[in-house]
Amino acid sequence: MPLGSPVLDERRARTAPRLPRRARVAVALGRTAAGGSRRLGLGAGGVVGGRIAAALDPDVLHHLGRHRTVVLVTGTNGKTTTASMLTRILEPLGAVAANRDGANMPDGVITALVDRPDAPLAVLEVDENYVAEVAQRLRPACLVLLNLSRDQLDRVGEVRTVERALREAIGALPGTAVVANCDDPLATSAATASARPVWVSTGGCWTADALACGRCGRPIHHDGPAWRCRCGLARPRPDWVLAGDRAVDAGGRTVPLELRLPGRANASNAVMAVAAAALLGVDPGAAGARLATITEVAGRYRRTVLGGHPVRLLLAKNPAGWRETLPLLDDRAPVVIAVNGREADGRDLSWLWDVPFERLRGRPVVAAGERSADLAVRLTYAGVAHLRCPDPVRAVAALDPGPVELVANYTAFRQLAPRSADG
Image 1 (tube, helix red, strand yellow):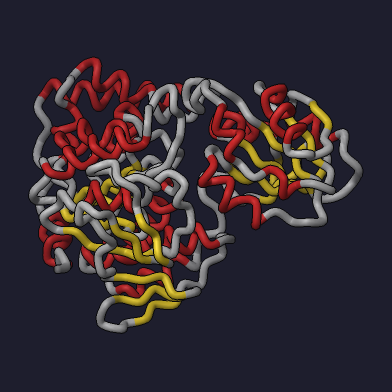
Image 2 (tube, one colour; image 1 turned 135 degrees about the horizontal axis):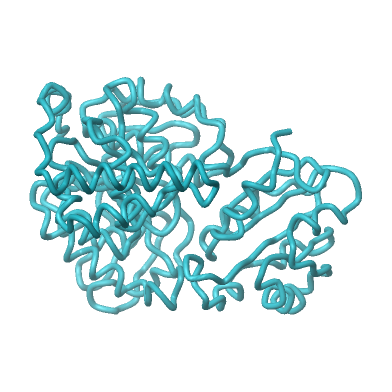
């Protein structure tokens, strides 16, 4: 059942409540800190403003969310892209507060709201571990749950533990609609706690992390897109389906998805965004048309010049993400892979052994990044001939002239942005 445009109209028309004095001071100093960080070149300011505001007023997140229609986007892969898509769709309705740089822990969420204190709409990506904390304070109109798979095992933990925490968080949000990927058994298990689920079939093919039921631990039986467990948990009938380059709802309405972002994963993100927008009362056809204007997301898929070479930058940070990235790589171009192991990446890189790097055999490959030695060991066992150069820019520069595909995990990718020039 759509929330309906009257919800958005009413919230846009409502005058934003005056913040308590303590919150106003926290917001002002947070904005000053974020702006100062950007001006001084110390960072993008996506975290420091929120951290200072929260230190000055622990309730600032609640105060900043009271007058807005809030959508939260979570999941292991695709948060930044889906949130960017939904932001682009909602922009014609009014100003949208968004953490566009991917700072998705509470400090980053607060910073996004501090930067746009009067925006009537907010689309915020949230790290899976912090959904309960953020949602309890913001009481979102909608939560978009994309997928759940292994990621940052040392920080996040086992994926079924994440599912249980999300299920509990969703159960505590009776007024929040949940748009969830019904092809993912773990995402489905969490979303069934919602009183208002909207099911989307994204055509996802990664099942390695959902071999056992999140509820009872028994094996999940997969039969094409359908899946079920003996305990009764099973794939729900979808309200929206990704059918090639179209999103189709349960009534047969078809929405063309003329995306300029590559790959099946981005089509999956798009159908999730269209379903969430429709729930909010946005015409699905208009939503699909807005997606055609997106060419990159936070620098991902951007073509630039690095080390004297034309380079395409891609992000891949876990096995499921790599499974979607490998088919996108140009077979004619060498590949530089940059892997770090900082806190934001997860220091446990055991996930490298679940990536089918064997597909890179027979092409020039360079292992780069702060954990290039770990990557080099994995490539050796995969039978991939490669060079090793910890600095990814130098790795690119040392290659023969021509285009290069550069795939990096999270912090390695962020390090590359200031070192590139538009080309």
